[in-house]
Length: 407
Image 1 (cartoon, rainbow, N blue to C red):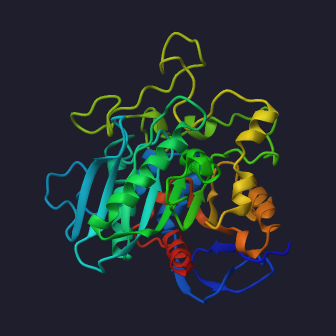
Image 2 (image 1 turned 45 degrees about the horizontal axis):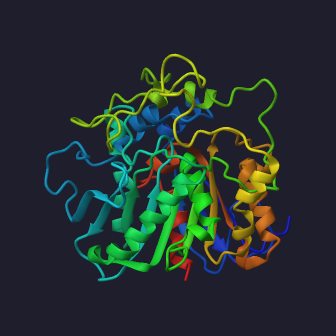
Image 3 (image 1 turned 180 degrees about the horizontal axis):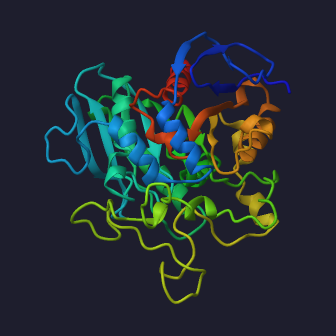
């Protein structure tokens, strides 16, 4: 296949090279404009445990692997400052919902105007993971990493809402708030990047694809990272359905087993002290049985970001983000882990079907619209975001290089 831009293999124990190339070479060759060397390594003891977990979404067991690599302090600590050298603002409100809040990280030393990295979490939308106490260290880790690399970090809390585009509207409101206020924290509102993980990609993909949701300054970001994306609407393109007889939810329901956390991905045993359901850091509503059943999540059905009722083909076309993605000036990265659910090394070299399909379609519009593909060798669905601010540079190295090259 011919690519104008964009295939990165973050290879264990190898040197990554980013070079100008029009040909996809599935080994160590990576892309574009500059040549950078980065050592990337998933620690061997962690990798072996990730392999045992398999192709699932396992926040609590992955947190137990990466928590020892983090500082002693986390959101539950009474120390002030929590992280020396970083000014940290918790739960800054950007909207009317109690969960319309962000955390802001800014290094005490550095330039007066710095790039801004916004993170949109997956799962139920928690900016701090709550499955058990070890999970409370995440996603402050991304904030520390960003500040150490000259950026101001914004961590968004997500929540459900009425309407197919409710989450996208929340992202729009948040971006406009950040544009208006981030200079107070040495952030440059004209140089912002946004990164979504897993279920957070659905509202972010919708936002990027709906110009009517943008604020007065436009889309507001220079680059977007769709990491292990829950597919958003790119009709008329179709992502292959799971194999007949498979259970896609097994990627969630099998979590917690290798480390003995009851409830796995759906546990809230690490909910923050004093927080109640509906508050940031409070316990999530239980994952319910099918809609209309007697117990579990109110009205049944999945938590935010895990799906909704199907719509007809005409509605999907009307809601599709694809037309705007073909035109946008925003640079796009599509990333996934080797151990992601649905990632098969025998198919597209392990690139998830959604990422490959969207990449190939956008590349038809020319090199300026061709996304960067990032394949994270040795990583899992959760380790790819838990590994930030650790010696494991498999994820952080390529992402930092990509951000720096975007003008």
